[in-house]
Image (cartoon, rainbow, N blue to C red; front, side):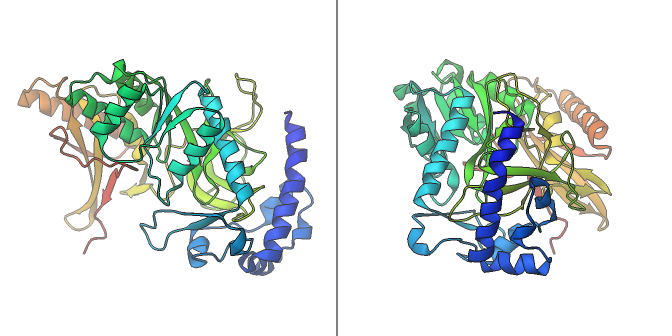
Length: 425
């Protein structure tokens, strides 16, 4: 669809949802009044920039159902975020919302190359987390065979992949690497399994990690994007060109803002993604701040699609570390580590205070036993090499500590990459 046609489609949907939340969600009615805004002020898409932003704190403050736009009798499903920093974000879906969700997942799966002939194994939780159920129904919609193996039991996961002839793996990128590691430990070359496509999401990951996954599992790794507050997975996904993630713009209006000032940024400028839902019934949100850092590209993709593409998310504003006055993102560190063959793709960033006042940055990373000689002198040389590379990228010094293989914690869900001890008593 040409861009102009898409914008013509978005405007009436946007007007409808803004008017609806004003009349059905007390929070939005009060928020608009506080900023002197009325739904009638929305005449063009560009007018949306004058409306207030919605934050995660607002969603938590209205726990559990304060932002629902329909009566509870119309809500047929509840999902929620993990709630690791307080009350979870609770989202509700109407029957139509679930149909929409399945269709969006079907889109991103087809974009990734999945067909009705594939067998897809979903290694996401099937609880309140949106990943498992979200991917499940969308993959079924296109006719793929779904193996709902959920999380845990990694050796059994590998057995099922072999015995069922699984061709599509759905999980976090960090768990994909763990699967490959456990397979090798059990005498299975993961590259001999039938896997062809990986649909990975739920955590930021770098291009270098993509290469690691593809090398270790022998598949084509694709990225998809979503978040509980918007709908779950299905907001955007890569096509086979893998030149950015196509955003489903007929359902989600996307903006990029300066995270410090809230000012709208242009295409090609890096900033924080902000989404407005255009078709959600149960839990619509207006200008939601995702804290995810990305860049938009509206040029026609090589695949022929014309929807805006977002660059792969490699960091979040709340993941950013300030080390001795310098902004440091975990993705920058990961990118360096993935280029060093002597180490494995498992690491932990530890930040502490040195002598009580100076920030201390330590990067713990596991040795790659296959590439390491066993010499203490070589060990020191690898540490120095990584330190130099990190210093060039970060412009602050970082201590590197090589640790034994499998000594760092493995997780079945989102990987825990940062331990900030500066505020510990």
